Amino acid sequence: EGEAVAMTAEDKIDGLSLSIRYEDRTLVRAATRGDGEVGEDVTANVRYIADIPQTLPQEAPAIVEVRGEVYMEKAAFAALNARLMAEAQATAEARGEPFDPDGVRQFANPRNAAAGSLRQKDASVTASRPLRFLAHGWGVVSEGGLPAQTQYGVMKALERWGIPVSPRLVVCADSAAMLAHYRQIQRQRADLPYDIDGVVYKVDRLDWQERLGFVAKAPRWAIAHKFPAEQAETTLEAIDIQVGRTGKLTPVGRLKPVTVGGVVVSNVTLHNRDEIARLGVRPGDRVIIQRAGDVIPQVVDNLTREEDRAPFFFPDHCPECGSEAVAEEGEVDVRCTAGLICPAQRIERLNHFVSRVAMDIDGLGDKTIREFFALGWLDKGPADIFRLKAHRDDILGREGWKEKSVDNLLNAIEDRRQPDAARLLFGLGIRHVGAVTARDLMKGLRDLHRLPAKAAEFGAYRADHPQGEPEKPSPFAARMLKAVKEIFEVTTDGIGIAVGHALADFFHEEHNVAVWDDLLGEVSPPPYVVEVKASTVSGKTIVFTGKLETMSRDEAKAQAEALGARAAGSVSAATDLVVAGPGAGSKLKKAAELGIEVIDEAAWAEIVKSAG
Image 1: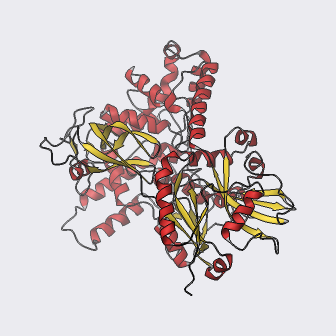
Image 2 (image 1 turned 135 degrees about the horizontal axis):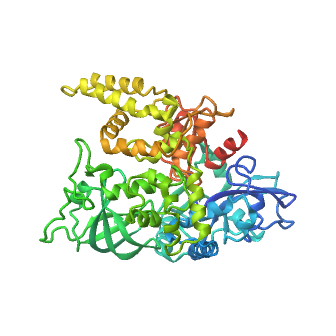
Image 3 (image 1 turned 90 degrees about the horizontal axis):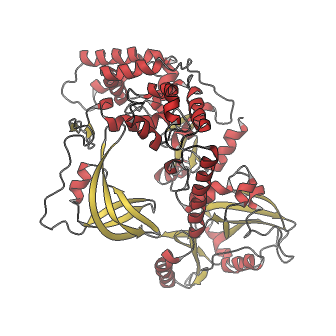
């Protein structure tokens, strides 16, 4: 009452949360979450992080759990990616294989690099990575073991024990001091050796922290003050139109390179025709660039909108094949109408077909696909991939190819002659048929060969039941959805009317049917069987939210299904479990309001692992 509340302020490190447990002042366990008892055990790897002491001095309590962030400095991150590129090139040369830099898997940012390095199964890989650690708090401490009665005092004690803490940890007497510190750090942010996305304030007095307590596992005595997304001004030098695998025309802004948040940005998506009109951008404009979520660059303002110049003309024909490009009713995206006749779509679909999430054919990167396509070896579609063995001598004569690399490629292709039916269907790149949708379709159909007839059946139903005047709620939509589920024998809620229309449209085109028949003449997908493992989440409804670091959203949903669980897209009273990654927002908040259990990605990995 009336007493000023002093707050500590420290950098909000953009890293991976880590809990380290010391017993008898010796490091015994390290986990990526929670209290050191639950989560992904990374003890063996943590022993290679030089910042983390293996033992504590005698003044430390016998048992203490230290919590903090594992991170990678920006310079070390850049050096690691350069090293990975050089190693990939050296490996390709040693194997006599052509080197495709686009096919080298590098880390997108320091946070992902830190997470991937810490979670390595081989501890020697972790040892080779420049990981750092900063403590920001503690958990379990043996009775009477806290060395001070304030947050600042305990953190300084950790520092005395050899555990690094934020070098900018300060105590702020009031809100004015907090804001002054925040603004100072914001100015210094770009020059810091590591990425931060804000400042964390904590009530300094520990007795007041105890009185304030927690809500939904979050402390009431701590709050994050995030930085706004960093911005920079530059020139929009050109607008190019790219054609994707579904025919979508995406405008890409080519920028005069500018540094935003420590990253050089030279390209930015302009999303669609409506976004260009909203911003009024044209080549030559001065624009403000922002990294959305400090990751994806976007244009947020046009500084020369009022200059008297002609507006950018968004093409009404495909820039690759010249076919008409239109936006369907109710959609903002403009698409090429040529389908698989369009060479750009064919190349992008081939890239998608061989990708890791689809057929997973190693050795066919974008550069190789474009080269083989230009030579006419992949002209008919994905079936031509399985006929590349006829061009073995021709490939061997191409620059960069040797006996071993050609054989490796052809063997990788042959290994996919009996593919998973859902992966094959997803690999075709049919609009609205993602990985999860493909699996849902195959659960009902079982045999992929039945799909064209089912699509034709729905197409006939659609022709016999044209839509009348729009109604809300629409009985027409309800009837169409029922038809989709009955005709395609759908057993889940994931298949909607749009999927039925997309399949009917795809198989209505003779060229698409020819591509389909040609492909199934080369591969033999076995009947689709869903294997469900016994697990603690069997029969439960799970929602994944936030950014997943070790898998894609589709891979996470596939894991849930394999464990007998249902993956839902939204949180409701029927939800049993939420798996939350960094950046989880409204879904996480709703889960807390409903009292639904929330775990992180590491805990989910343990559930999957325990199911075998």
